Length: 209
Image 1 (cartoon, rainbow, N blue to C red):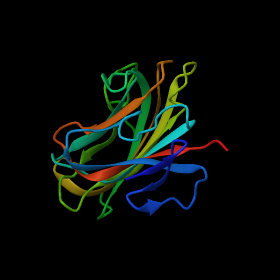
Image 2 (spheres, rainbow, N blue to C red; image 1 turned 30 degrees about the horizontal axis):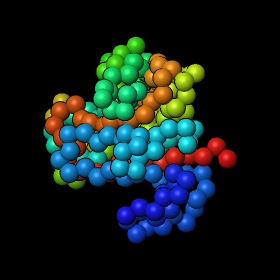
Image 3 (cartoon, rainbow, N blue to C red; image 1 turned 135 degrees about the horizontal axis):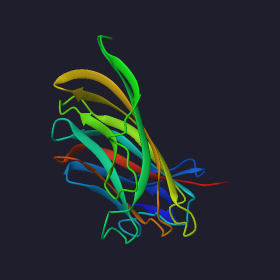
Image 4 (cartoon, rainbow, N blue to C red; image 1 turned 180 degrees about the horizontal axis):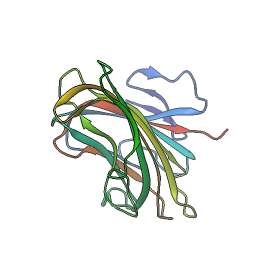
């Protein structure tokens, strides 16, 4: 049971926050063969409004149930009834094989969006092997604004798989904006195929002072 004061989680599941400074833990969702993980403002203790100007999602060892699946996200302006906001983004990535036999650093125009309501990929070709997972973060800026578009940045690292070859350490960087001046009040994560077999996603609010 969580102890919440002024929309700030002081204790959750027996763990107390010793630092009520700039980074405030709001909610942790744990996957167990989950089709999606959704953070909806006002649901199950989730805060995603003007309480904080910045929100940060952290991915911890997310594991797909299907091989070569892409982890992506979408947002909602109607409390999760629809996840179909229009986004314009840029995507680039780098990787290095364990044997050092192959590596790259490049922009990927196939995985960015241009005024599209499709989910934004934040990692791709994730490996289904039991030891493999994706970790990283996504930062969303001022989602409650009704004046400006909503900027976001994401960085992930995973053990990816390309054309049947394993053993890549792959870093994906995504930046962009939600081209809507309505308040964003829900964010959903899912793989392009199969379920989120395991892992956690944590939501934090960041104070501006």
